[in-house]
Every structure is written in C-alpha cells, then in structure tokens.
Length: 445
Image (cartoon, rainbow, N blue to C red; front, top):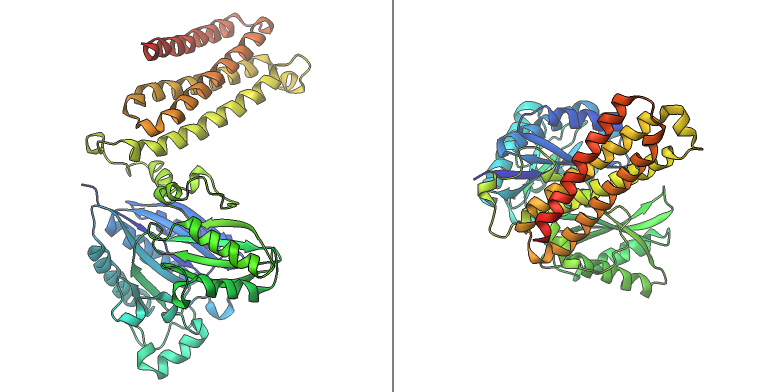
C-alpha cells in the first residue's frame, strides 16, 4: 500500500511573492514531494503551501523550506493581522493513506529535531504531537506572538520550547510542528469594517468560549477590502460541518446589525466536507473543482493508487476525474466558440491567421473533445449510480463540443486552397466522427 501524507506549512510572508516562489522551489526540489497548492494573503502577510507525497520526502521538503524561510524572512520587520511565532510558523503533518497518526507524530518529532540541528530554530510540538496537554492547542503556544514569546521563553520555563534553547532564533523565531487530522481554514467576511464585531462573533462561535465544538476563530480587520473578517479553523468537519459554522456566523452577524458578504477557503478542502454541506449556499468567493484536495492529488503523477488497488466503489477515485473532465470540456467548448468566430467571413482573426490555421484550431478542439468522450464511455461502467447524471451531462457536453468544432471546420473547408491541407483535415474529421458514432453505437446497446 502507498504511504501518503499531507503537510501544510504556513510561512510569515504573503506580500513578496518572489520569496514565496523560493520556498516553493526549495520544496519542489525534493523527489517524492509534490507541491499541489499555494495561497498568499497580503493582509495576513502569510502563505499556506500544501505538500503531498511519501512521508520521508515531505518531511525533508518541509525542513528545507524552513531553512529557506530563515534566510529570507525577518520577523523583526514583519507585520500582518495573523498571529505568528516564526518565519515558518507551523508545520503540520496529516495522514492520508497507509500511515497512522502515531507515525505522523513520530515524523513531527524528527522534523523538530532536524530544524534545531540544521538551522537552530527552536520548536514547539502541538496537536497530536504535543508533549504536554496545554500545548495541544496552538493558540496557547502562540500567546504573545513572536515579540511576546521571545521574552516569555527566557524568563518562564513553562513557555520554553520543546526542542532547542529558550532563546528564540533572532530573526526566524520558533516553529510549531504537529500532527493532526485534515483541517479546513475558512474565512467569513462581514459588511462592516468594525473589527470588534468580528471578534465578538469569533468569541461566540469558538469552542473554547462555549461555541461550536472543533471550531477555532479570531476576528481580524482586512484593510485591503475595508471589511472585518472572522478567521476560522475547523478541526473536525465531520463532527461540525462547514455549513453549521457559516450559519452561526450569519446569525450572530444579524444580531449585531450586519451581514455576511462572502467567504473563502484557504488552501484545499476534502471532498467529504463538500458533500456534508450539500446545497447550502456558503457564499464562497473562490471555490472551484481545483480547490478540492482529491482533485489536486489526482492531477499529480504517481499519487493515485494502481488500478488493481481501487476500492469496490470507484466513486471515491473517479469523482475527481469527473470534475477534471468537466473543466476540460468547458475549456474546449470555449476554444471552439473562439475558433468559430475566426471562421466567420468578415472576421479579422480569419484574415490575420488564415483559414488553414482556423480550420486546424477547430479540428484540434474536436479531437480533444472526442478523446474526452471516449474516456468517459470507457469508464462509465465503473461509475457509481450517484455519478451517472454527471456522467451523462459530461458526455453530452463533449459530443456537443466536438460537433460544434467539426461544423466550424466544414464551414472553412471551401475556402482552403491547399489540397494536402484539405485532405488532412478531411481524414481527421472522419476519424473524429468514427470515434463519436462508434462509441455512441456501443453505448446505445
């Protein structure tokens, strides 16, 4: 069985993207570790990067990135609305497949030792990797942030790091390294700039103040948007679904005379979390199939299990393919529309690029849509009943895209002068038609 983990290091840099690029480059250089997502926020002055891969490779990538962050980020010059204690603020390890939480705890402990050994960065262990109960919650470690912890760690043994000297790194501070379940980082925006309202709502919804279980929240001011934000970590989305958090924030906002104007996912979200919120409108601003963890993983070579390891219900594995194909079909449909404009007799594009280029463009779109259709037909037998509606809609979209492109190609053919080009296009057109009709005949039986 494959051994697969996720790691989501958070870095205290969200404004200088060249520095973030350097962090990603350091991680990507480790074979077996794949960067599948990155997100930077200037107001938070923070970047969240998602890695997946083999445990040892992902651990090494996180360590190297922390070293690079120590070179590039000076916390003495850092400002942002998000709490932090380090240039590399947190490094959590999350078990995905073939590895236990206990093994992730052991990995976190090893990484902590390496950070001190290589870069003299002190380390605090949190969540499942915590060495004492009061350090399970990250907010307890972060109390006072870098500036406060720098002083507290020297004078109070209870605030000293788990690894390294009490004295924090002068520019990189300390790093919290942990092991945990999948977490959803989620922000909700209010139609007010009054941060005190966001803080009141955060206090009302977070579990530590008597609110929803598995919810951590703080109120922040987002100056770039002129809005207050409730910034949330949902540590168990199965026990407390995302829609319940959104609904409570919405109600608390209404009680205070304001409203929710939007929300956003930070990083990636597990597919199951989406299934749990169903048709509920979370007013998400940045959601797309690319936001789903399983979709990103499916796009990374070598991450998916071999065919003989697929579960009996293939929906778990194939659903990301449906979303990926939906995006592809839509993209080719748009391409076909653009190409059809080029084909019009009075189109400027037609005269700029020539009818041959336009015909080739239509044909390429038709070929791509036809290939997608073939793949859908081949995989249809493995689709779960709950996926069949999506499957049929995708197949129809693929056929429509292919036929629209072929019709545009036919419209251009009479204007082509080169006999060899005409012959090549006709041959390609016939091949696409054979794919579509051949697959259709099989499907109808």
